[in-house]
Length: 374
Image (cartoon, rainbow, N blue to C red; front, side, top):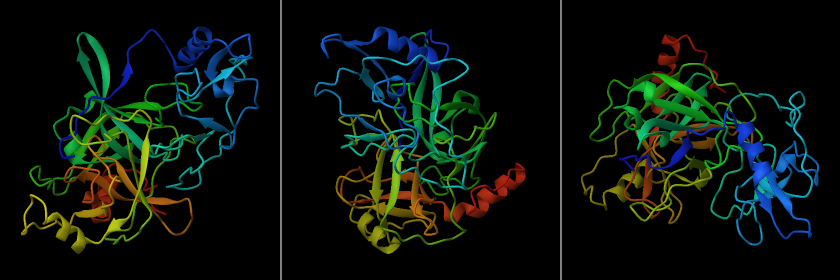
């Protein structure tokens, strides 16, 4: 996990000028034969006239592919009669509006998925989740490749791990908010991309042991808040977080090593926080040795077989409930490192509480409002 690769391709250059063009093209060329005698067309669910347009997250889409479903993307349905999308009357639900930081959409935004047997998150469930992409030229083609995760803490600021971005030219990086399924641009609410204009890495970052592994990305223009794009809350300085119902999210690998594959749809995993002394004891049983000291800038979570963050999740958020509202969460950790993944060894995360004063100071230097306080 300390070496974050970026093999997952998010965006290719294409002849589509917009997500709308991409969706409209799909409506015209993707036909499903043999249903109802007359066939039908695979279209985004909100363009199908067979059912009412879902606006409150209660609609169901089964994301399991195969089993007689001829459509190839997670948000397509096989429809006998499609709706025309008028330029002056786009098919969009009424926005719910903002209500403070850290509001998790547990039932999704615009629709609710079923068939998520592999821990897929609902669309818009974690609206602060950011994918950090790097623009590279591969065989003459400009691609945006997935590098690591981050969390939106201000419309201009992404919180991530220093090890993800320390050697990068900021202008080669893009921050993408509102992403969910990396292989379709047909979600009802689009993602938003911003160019990174500045990288602020903690001055005491130590690459060898990953001490002070925290960084802020400043984007060139603010993200526009939407139901699928918002900010996470941050804890108070030096808070000690002990909670059995925290969550990590990301597009990282399912298994460490060459056998693992990066995720297409954003995944989530529920993790308990692990007390510091117990975590250190467990880590001393590994190749780290019996004298290993867990630095005070880290916290631990997990330790349950099959439930862990992994390679590619670096920089992503670990969130825990605030206690003041059942759907409000703060960021307790940043995915940092671990001993393999998916086993019974706790994962190690940057303690956001330890760096709250540093984050506040950087926000003050930038004259940005601390919208993440709750």
